[in-house]
Amino acid sequence: MQFLGNIDAKLDGKGRVFVPAQFRRLLEQSNETALVLRVNSESGFAKLYPLSEWTRQCEELKSRLNLWKAQDQMIYRTFTSKAEQLELDSNGRVLLQKKYLEQLGIDLDVVFVGVGDYLELWSRDRYEASMMDEASLEAALEKIMV
Image 1 (tube, rainbow, N blue to C red):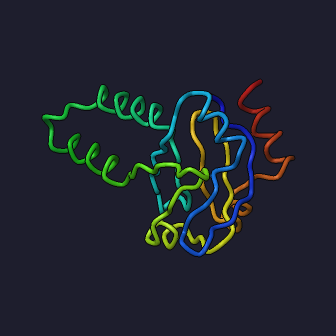
Image 2 (image 1 turned 135 degrees about the horizontal axis):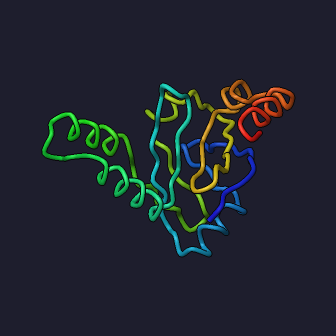
Image 3 (image 1 turned 90 degrees about the vertical axis):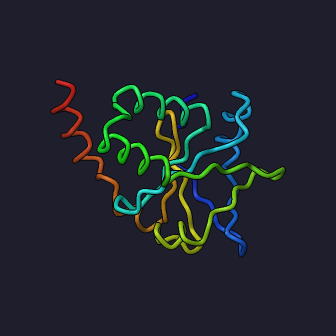
């Protein structure tokens, strides 16, 4: 499953947002009915993982940790405790808790961004501020790829 592109959406009065149709279709094709939301308020956006991808990420992380060590337990606990499973309702919406909306600076306008295996959820303003201009992107890609 490859999520690509960015799509604007709006919250309703209850904190629900429609997952854009092109992303819902990808989820449906993979028989995914749930997303896992992990908010990183430091970065100003949330990641939305299909449940199978979230499970894969957790298994990958656990394979690199020794859960008998206190530091590793803390890392895993912190990573997983800041996540919440969201079910798509029959209309293709998810309900976002008020605390997450506040942490992300989302009031009405939302942007869903496809980032390969997962989606990102941004406030419109933060998303626009986070993007590189095309010339900077080209220069960075050249540096990396050549």
